[in-house]
Image (cartoon, rainbow, N blue to C red; front, side):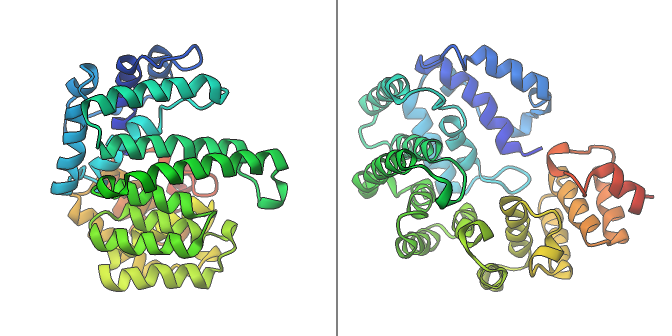
Length: 341
């Protein structure tokens, strides 16, 4: 289970309560009930908890301090994922935009006023606001190809993506102290200017080389859905991995498989299993045999028809099968039948 999603879920429940922005469609109780139904709450471990008192007590200054601490200390969970990314998920996953803008905009304004009263130069508040407008722009546009978007969809998209960009540009002199600012700007520039997107990506990764989520954000522009060839994607990934090693090669092709929705990574891309395998083995060593990583190692080993690697991963999993890591043609029961002990 993705631990950042788990922490995000718990923080989101508390955040809605103390911001006073819960709605009939998405109350803290409804969210908690949904999370219980999926089993996520039961999977929260003590080592993966963020101190909840800041959210429960509505302490914006402490939330800002957490963001600064996680940035300064490069804080990560046992599986290597960033705690800063998880903290950002407080707003990212639980801002309800499934309603007319006239209804959620006042809620956002209330949140921002309360936050800025405590800290007028809150980087986390600025990035969170920009993300809401970015997310809403995409809701209006829809997720289809460009030629399927209506005129009204494009008009709404351009209006709110520009709003997100303005929030980011107006806050850059203080908010780019967090890598989250660059992550959001890369997303905003995806449809506005590829040149600007790559410029912000280069600036951000130079400033925050430890925050590999910036690689994932820039990888989005190298998806087939955005007109990229498998050669372009492979060059992007291998160039990064040449500098950062096999673990990053594994992480990036792992991310690419998910973002591109590939049923078989090794047939539909130029990913090389021997290098991914080395990368996963290094990641497992670095994360002390993290079960989430092991589940994904097993899934890709199954795709590659590598029985020995699958069994190595299965031993680490030891029954702790994570359904989030498995899908379709690489379901765990099928792979275990083919390659298990």
